[in-house]
Every structure is written in C-alpha cells, then in structure tokens.
Image 1 (cartoon, rainbow, N blue to C red):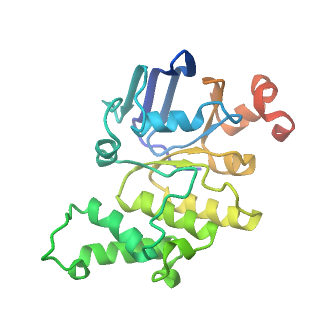
Image 2 (image 1 turned 90 degrees about the vertical axis):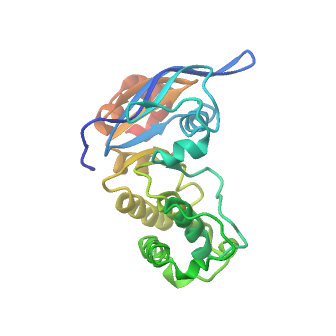
Image 3 (image 1 turned 120 degrees about the horizontal axis):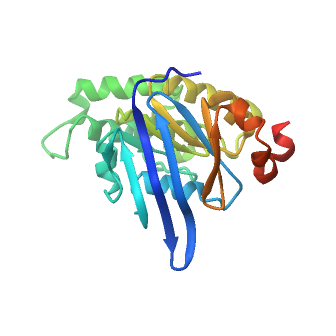
Length: 254
C-alpha cells in the first residue's frame, strides 16, 4: 500500500451534476488524501466517468465545490487544472495514432517543461526534453517501440502509452479511467504493476471494474451508486459492507 502524505489532494463538497431534469451526481462528498491510491467503483451508469469529468474540468458542477490541495478548481478549464498538477486518462484510448511513441511522450513533456512552438527551435536539441522522454519510455517499457506509430501498438501498449502521457507532465495527482478494461489477465497484471510503480509518491484516483485490481491496488475505496457515494473505506471495510454487497459487489465480494 502507498504511503499517505499530510493533507488532502482532492476534495468534493456537496457536488451535484444535472442534465435538464436528470440528476446524475447527487450531493457527493469525497476526500482523497495526498499519496493515497483511491478507487471509485460502482455499476454501469452510476456516474463514475461524469465525476471524473467534473474533477478534471471537462464538465462544470451544477452545485458544490471541488478542491485540489485546498484550492477551488470547480469551473476551471481542463488545461488550468492540469497546470495545477492534476492529469487524467480516458476510458477510450486517447493517443496521437499517426505520431510515434516517442513523439507522443515528447509532446506531453514539451508542454510540462514550458516549451512552446517556435519555428527556429530544433526540439531534438533540448536535452531536458530528450532525457525526460527517454526515461518515461523506460518506465512504461516501450523503449523498443519508440519509433512505431502509436496506432500500430497493441491495445495494452496503447494503454501503457496513455499512462506515460498522463504522467509526462509531472502531475502529482493522477486520474485513471478504467485503465485495464479489455485486457487479458496477463496484460492486466502488467498494467497494475506499471500503475503501482508510476504512482508511487503520487495521488491516484482510479475508476475500475476489475475487483481484483481494485482490492489489490487501492488503499481506500468509494462506492458510487445512482450518483451517490454509499460507502467509503479500506478494501476490508468495503468487502464486508452489507450495503455495498447488495448494491453492487454481490458474489464478487466473497
């Protein structure tokens, strides 16, 4: 399990999201400690991805407040939230298919190091960018695939690349949306090992349906059902929670 740091990384206070008359997120209170690996689980349609979109700025809450390290971020655009140290992945792989693995990572690193487009600069001559990009490729085990267009990678490799892009900016708060979806058992094991290694010392909020991943990776778990958090606690507490079993886990909790 990861080592918690002092303070709260993410906090939601009375957050709600409605679309017309439909309430998708209802009065959610949530705290994720710095350095914690926190899993958000729940049945399909519970509102997990909507909650991620609210935290990362892709949607604005209808009611309530979202804080990142005690600073309000609700209503800010995604790029401003990212610059404050929060980065996320998506359910659907989101890489530049026609660019190489190296170029995908380098784009993220360039932005994080403050480099901007200038036609007179040769980005190959920026040692900080080159070294950081090379290290991330080592971290995600894609050095041998550095010159391959991202669209030609296997699905599991594309997910690893997306995680690399997510951390390339140096964010210390990471949101991963179903990072192991569609993977085989062996691919899932490798992905979990990668996530565990790359989020060491960082804060992780993860949406995941694979309960073996959730209970093996998370320090704490929150359960979202019909837009409301019905329980939060350690894996052991969630595993033994009767209300959670009835609402979601069923036999998987056994």
